[in-house]
Length: 168
Image 1 (cartoon, rainbow, N blue to C red):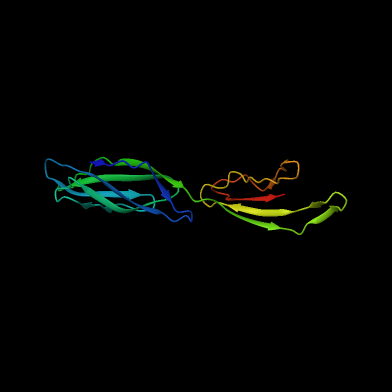
Image 2: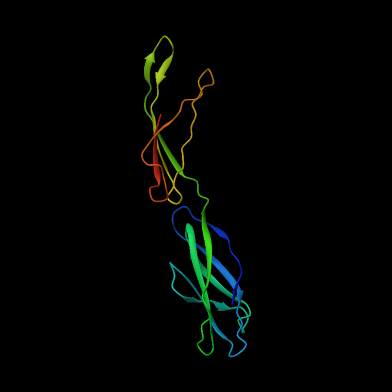
């Protein structure tokens, strides 16, 4: 039993799986191959289909892959019921969906009419339901080309806690 390689696949940003097709070969010189099976944590063993009647090429459609490491298992069963050793393939579901950012701008509070200075409060929320938000960057350019830092509140984000609140 051989499985053609897959390293990674881009998955949707909403947590739903991306469905992948695996292909490979299977041979049994004694009784012949009866079936090739594929399984994942999200899908128990299902039968692949023979591309050639002797299973020299097989294909498994609609194998679900989600964000992160996915263990996909393959086995072949011959006409006498003998099962090949399970072959494990790990495929990475990659997050290529950008985080969402929502901002709320509060009305400015005048600090000094003489210096034309005002305090602006901007609040927001950055969310990424898969890999999380690592950081939120922003810049405020004043007349001297200086940049003010953002203050972040809430936990640093991981896939388990996907939002990060920001305030300026």
